[in-house]
Amino acid sequence: MNNFDSFAAGVESIIIILLCIYYLVVQIKGNNSLFVYSSSNFWIIITFLIYLSGTFFLYIMTENMIKSKSFQHQYVVINSVFNILKNILLSIAMLMKPTPTNIQKAKFKGWDNDLNTSKLKNQS
Amino acid sequence: MFFLQTPDNSFSVTNVLIFGTLGMFVLAITLVSVVVFHQRRVIKFNKQLQKMEEEKQQMLLKASINFQEEERQRIAADLHDDAGPLLATARLYLNENLIHQETAVQLQSIFSAKQIIDDSIQLIRNISHSLMPPTLKNFGLESAMKDLFEKINGSGVINASARFHDNRERLKEDQELLVFRVLQELVTNIIKHSCAGFIHLTQNVQGNFSYFRIHHDGKGILQEEFEKLNYASGGLGLKNIESRIKVLKGSILFEIDSTQTYYKVTIEVPREPVK
Image 1: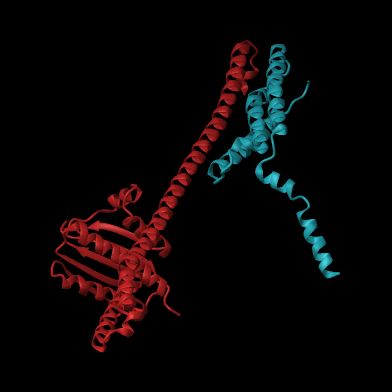
Image 2: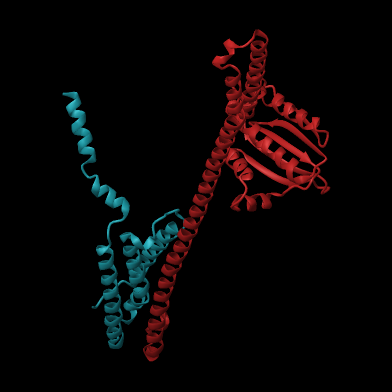
């Protein structure tokens, strides 16, 4: 690790964190009858939010402290911890059961096909 | 970030890194928790609201079913207790032995039977009028209310009057019937419970709404009391008023005059004039 652009990483983190906060605000304002944590989107969003919040200071300091041995050690520890946390949260997101709307979509997968075939039959 | 470049304060750099990271992490967790708990509370509140609304609907439905049942029982009782015996008596007068009787007795029997049948006709007329007032159907709400108030005035106990300011366009027939029933129930309640000396009904139109206001000087109720009684288990009258107002898509307001002398009940009904 010889070169690192802290500015770009910092700006990227801020933008993504702001977008995550925007998503959460929309969830609060929206009149949703489903619990927010029952959707996989929510878990993906909080994964980004927690990972980027946790590593934000690390990234903005890396450019200047890259030569310091103790910092490198801390970098590895902090980055690994948040990486593990990120992976756990992403796994939860992937293992989430589909929400009712998704179930409905899955259940009536052939809905449109049926409509089309009946239309074709009528035409013939 | 210039302070991070000085090699001698690596301890403070470590501190900044650790506390900054922890701070950001705690902030993120707090934010997520706030969102989750807030949303849970909102959903719980909405569910509770929905449940209450459902309970109210259920109560109104029950009230209207009970009311129908009571009405049926009343009609059945009227028919069974009054019309039944009358017609049975008439049948007795007109039995087969009548032809073996003298002419005078025959005439007397026929006359009695005729009178009993007239009474039955009158009785059935009364029952049908109480179900659907003919004045309302033929001449509209104004006439029906004035008719009702005239009957109340006839008792000499309460002074009842009605004034319709703008009734050029009648409401739809079913709307008129619902408004009539609501006003009738209100007037009955006033007579029964308020010990009022006078009742005055005024009607007015403003925009797309018709307003009916009843004033009386007895002991009335206010809106909070109405809501409370509406949720209470007993008493069909107010629940029927509420359900009828709901069907009308209107609103009802119970209030007291600024001088604290008169109680007012105002009904607002969206106008759907007869085509």
